[in-house]
Image (cartoon, rainbow, N blue to C red; front, side):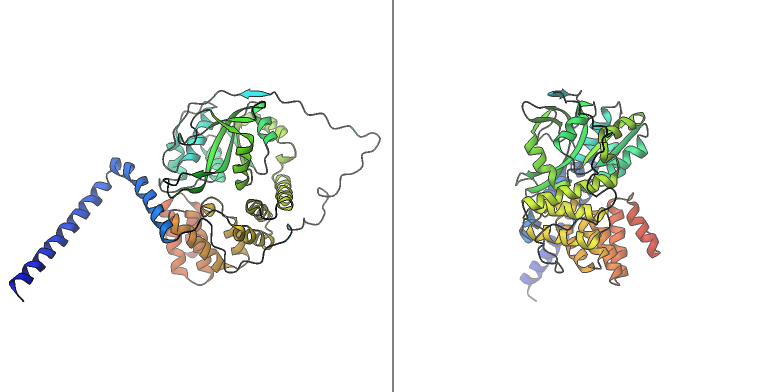
Length: 421
């Protein structure tokens, strides 16, 4: 070996050692909370863009086991006493009371606005809703319990309601689906702000752009202008007292089955139930939402969101075969790739139909571009378990708990298999 070659090898060795030391120092610096806080979201956005390049496509992949498109909506269940045609009123029947007309304009006091942290629109919006009733906390009091990892990109409706019921017991919380504009106005006119979850389009520079989900707190409306007043925790999409047209809200709201969250003083539950009317019964509410989805499919058989809502409402009634076909149709028509970051009905339906590989494939697609999605990890783990891959299942359950140590479903799964964290 010549002296020149030895010198080059020595130089390469020193270079590799220096690079390794520099990388280690950068990693240690990154672990400092102020540095991590500023860089983590930027690295995640860059990663999202790169992953989009590696696996391009704006929609979820169609499961291999998907059935053919359904030509017409799933038939309604056989008639029951609450589903049959209304009885003809007799001579002594009391006419239904005429609804009290709503005011043309309502503006509730706007709670102190809070700018959301990264991936924190759910906790930030809930914080504003609670603040309306005198709560003194902020979004981090909520996210510390519901999503301790800032990279966790979703807090679902059930989790937000759970927080209110367990951490703010002097307040009540309920959610329903299948809402409409008049329902929102009715609660606002009665003095109650309303949380909704809706879709919107991200800027291409924001994690690759495309469709995403977002929470808003509605605090007023103006009938003449056809707008809601919303508290938007994201200054880039609106900020405080944002004006949202009825049409814009409903278009984005449909993707989430038109879900809405009500928060109210616990002693006013009776008034809330009166305002809910027939929707006070969750089963009746879901039946009505089911019919809304069917009607929208009849009007537009290629409405993927309507098909997904049909599947979600069928899952509620544990009609998993029909739900699976509805989800197959929605995904085949085309759902945004972020969709299963927020809603998990296909996992539940496919799993209960024994379509375990479809669960895994859908979770893989979600996790490739949204790595910190504990619900996808949970359902992929259960599917792996049913296919005999116990080690893979345990790995997924533990990964879910690394993201969210408070995720009771993942802890139950590990306990069921007889493993510790």
